[in-house]
Length: 305
Image (cartoon, rainbow, N blue to C red):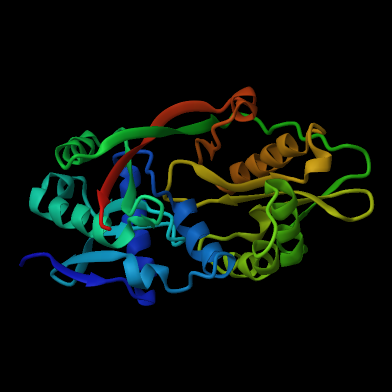
């Protein structure tokens, strides 16, 4: 039976999630489990985009089973990601034509100043067949986002907090603490500050969310000063950190290091896990995160006005 297209519906969340998990078999995926959970949980309220996936995400089914997907972060910024049920699907040129065309027509953002549609296609460097296909369609190479993983040691990390500071987890902290630290860490203002509390409330409802891996550091007055959420699935080779934040007035006190080490220790107690996926800044390198793969961003544009 041929592949049949249809648009995404809310009931497809778990089926697309299975495509995400399948992708770990052949790469460090650009569209990770943490990205899937974080974007679906946070962005609808945070950026007022509750129907983005329904309007833009494309699915292809074979014999009633989901085979491929084109998806975005749900914020209309022109980013796109490809998902497959098997690695072999990447060699189906007719399918790739349909998927790339869907991304170009439905996910590319519009730039008023130039009258162009612009698309950023995220392709893991471990999937060269997709890269070569993008080149043939006229895409241009852009920046790379490195996948950094901290290997777990044989014994627990030593966790050190400043005097008077303490951990609480998601079984104790309100949604407001997460949204407040997030805002003061990443320096944004309205309208996102107003929607952050509801967004983090919804994020905490996602399937892979575990309250014991949702960490907050409180200062001596009980104010939240740092947050970290770990996404862990026993079927995946490593856990994933998203987000990590420390309020701007508590930087360089060791809070981020303490959050990562405490989170790592909790994951190691859950079961086998070889490490933690984190960010690509010097801070992470200093903690022992190493570069394992890259997410290549391929750019497409077309003048439409």
